[in-house]
Picture (cartoon, rainbow, N blue to C red):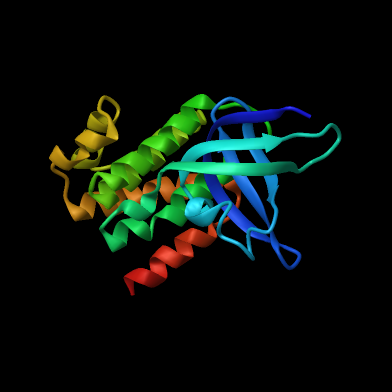
Length: 213
C-alpha cells in the first residue's frame, strides 16, 4: 500500500479507544479524509501539537480499499493558528474549522475552500483583526458554496465592506475601516444564511457567544 502525501488542514479530532485518535482533515487535492492516528493520546512524539484544529501541514497517510478510515503515518506542521498572539483570535479557530468541516464533502477535492482555510491560518498568525477576518471568511465560504444572498436591508457600510472584501486578500483587512456595529450586522446576516443552509446551529457559535458574556 503506497504512502500518499499531501498538504492538509486539520479540522477536528476525537478519541478512539484508549490510545488512538480519529483525525478529520481537508486535503488540497483529495478532499476531506478521516484517519486513525495510532497512539496519539499516549505519545506526543509522532504527532505532537500537529493535531490542533486549523493546523496546516504536510500529511502522510495510507488508504486501503473498502476502508472508511485511512491510517495516518505523520503530520509535519507548517503553520498553526496557535502562533496567533491575540487570545480572541484563538477563540475563532474552532469556528473556522467547524464551518470548513460542515461544508467539505467526503473525498471530494475543493481546492478553493482549502486555500481559503489556509489563508485564515496565515492571517491569524500575522495579526489580522479577527472580527473583520471572520466576516470575510463567512462571506467567501458562502460565495464558494454558491449560496451567498446579500440581505435586503444591509446598511451602506456593510455593503461597502463586502464590496471591498470581494477584491482583496485577507491580509489587507487591517487597512479597511469598518465599525463594530457593521461587523455585528454582517455577523447576524451571515449566520442566518449559514443556519438556513446547514439546517442547524453550530456548536462553535454557542462557544463564541458564551465568551462574549
